[in-house]
Amino acid sequence: MAKPLRHTGEFFRRTDEWRKHPMLVNQFRHATPGLGIALVAFGVYLVGEAVYNRVNRPDTHDTH
Image 1 (spheres, rainbow, N blue to C red):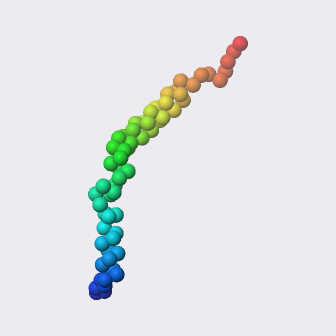
Image 2: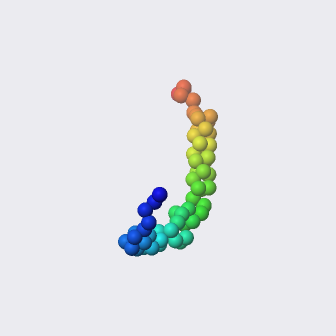
Image 3: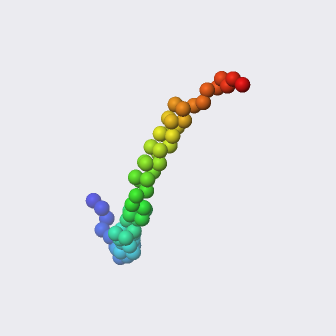
C-alpha cells in the first residue's frame, strides 16, 4: 500500500500540477498542425523525383 502524503508531498503535488495544464500538453502537435502532412508529401515528392531521374537517365554512351 502506498504511503500517505505528508505536508511536503502534498505541496510538491500541487506545485507540479501546472505541468499538466492543457495549454502545455502536446504543444508541438498543436503548434504545427500541418507539419506531418507536409513531411509525408515532401517524402513522396523526393521518392518520385528519384524514380523519375532513374528512369530518364541519359545514355552513358555518348558518340561525338
